[in-house]
Image 1 (spheres, rainbow, N blue to C red):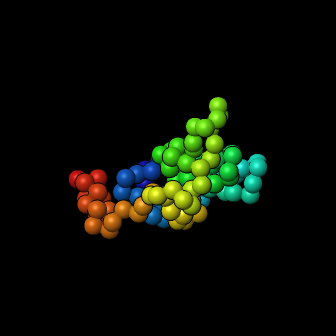
Image 2 (tube, helix red, strand yellow; image 1 turned 90 degrees about the vertical axis):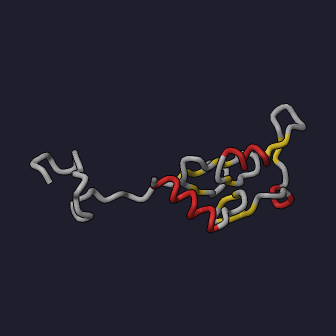
Image 3 (tube, rainbow, N blue to C red; image 1 turned 45 degrees about the vertical axis):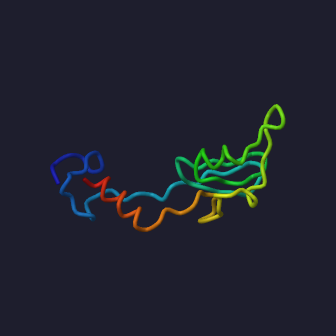
Length: 106
């Protein structure tokens, strides 16, 4: 590492011991239930207190029968499944995951 003050810069060739440690993310919480979640894209519904992995899943569970919408029964919604503490769309097949990873690393 260079002579810079520790913690202000990280050299690209720094060893893991020289890199600053990361703290685990602080979970978000809901004031109306005991749910905790992390994730930039995660959405928690203040109506039904379910947590969704992204805005698409959240939006699909909201109906429009009333002025402010209503929560649909997510257990009965095709395409949503409860995994890793959140309601999510179907898991991507492993072959497609590998293909996407390869595209990103090019």
